[in-house]
Amino acid sequence: MTGSQTPSFASGSAGSAEPADPARQRILLVDDDETIREHLGGVLSRSGLDVRMAANGAEALERLDEEEPDLVILDVMMPVMDGREALRRIRERHEWLPVILLTQVGESFERASALDEGADDYLNKPFDPHELLARIRAVLRRSSRGSAPLSTSSTLTSGELRIDRTARRIFVGGKEDQLTPRAFALLEYLMAHPGEVFTRERLLQTVWGFDAIVTTRAVDHRIAEIRRVIGSVDGSPTYIETVPSLGYRFAQKVERS
View 1 (cartoon, rainbow, N blue to C red):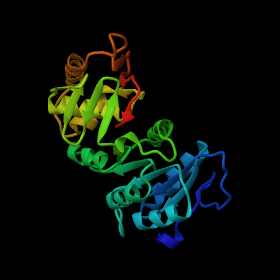
View 2: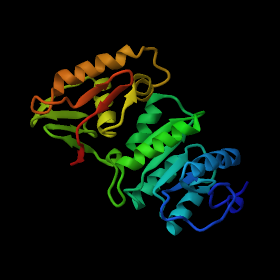
View 3: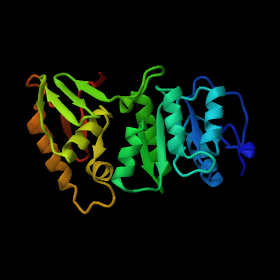
View 4: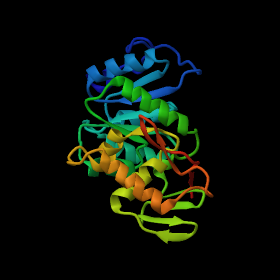
């Protein structure tokens, strides 16, 4: 299907062209695979989202000039303009706009690169559409129109804790401290997604990558390292909470700085 043939709106059925419902959050779904667009468009619209579609990055940018979605879902591998280039251009023009990348690459450095370039989250293909829906809702909960997402900030602060993502440095109470590279990456990811619960498996895939030959106990060891370094908030609840039977979350407010 060419860009001119791509349905521009999905509400109930992916090919409909009805006026937008202002009460529904608007999603721009960008993928060159027609089957994926039609299937995901249907799932997301039946879940109460106002779904629009584009077949590549260039077409997505055109739609952004005409419309104001609340979130963009970008496939990485597409003709004309791929998702990475589209993401870079979106960040230049719409700093606040949340973006979720869909990728078929499992290496951890690829995902780290995607997050460094400003993606709010990513999902590795193939995936359960309901997992994507859960990610969409999580990103929308922590995003606010007109303000850039935490994932685009070079420095994150929570109470006495501050991390410099560019220099890979951590400060507690104004004093620099040290974490191993893996522990820093884990803390960075949790701070960029405050309040969200992540399973050990999800953290393992995100920080270590699918190619890593380690068990989920590696996550527990790095969490213990982080806790030893950053301590707690004035002796009260810790920055990182353990959620029984689920995983971990960063429990304190995080600000761009």
